[in-house]
Image (tube, rainbow, N blue to C red; front, side, top):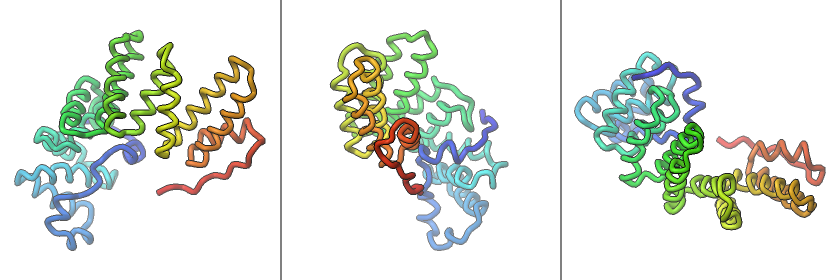
Length: 261
């Protein structure tokens, strides 16, 4: 069930949602602050064994956030995560789906990932819709561009976007630009909307689209538009946009933004 995995914290730090130890801090908030990772783990495990679903999730959280300190607990921690998910813990369901989608901790299994992510989505977990969109997009690319899989991917990105998930809105727009003959102007408006919410990658994709227009039509206004979008993306810290500007534009001095914690 559990696979060997590398760079776990690097892979999950921007995605995984189980970083608050809700049960054990509620139980002994002051004492927990001074515990070792193993002591916290064992406390959460004791509560989990009493049937506390949140504590089941905490067991995996502690394992994850301290990895590789508790590396020998991987099988046990994964089992508690699965128990939490089976007991309808929404964050555990999301993480079960995400981990099986990526093949880290658990064996990669997109069909099982879909089951868990749909359970989380049904309970209102917004980001689960986005991950479902990515899964069906992966299936689409692996199955000779089966259009039904693309349509399913678009359905989930659309659901996420309607619930306010900005990366889902971005992916919905990118899909339209990459795979559809019509709706490009609406897709560009989606990217502008996503950028308006601070999404740097959306500005970069607007820059890419402007470059394509420049290459097709040869009109320098499109190149200038691209530079403007890359600048906006760079100002929000997008490293790819910073690199592009450094290589392709002498119209602005681009400073590396401060590292965000």
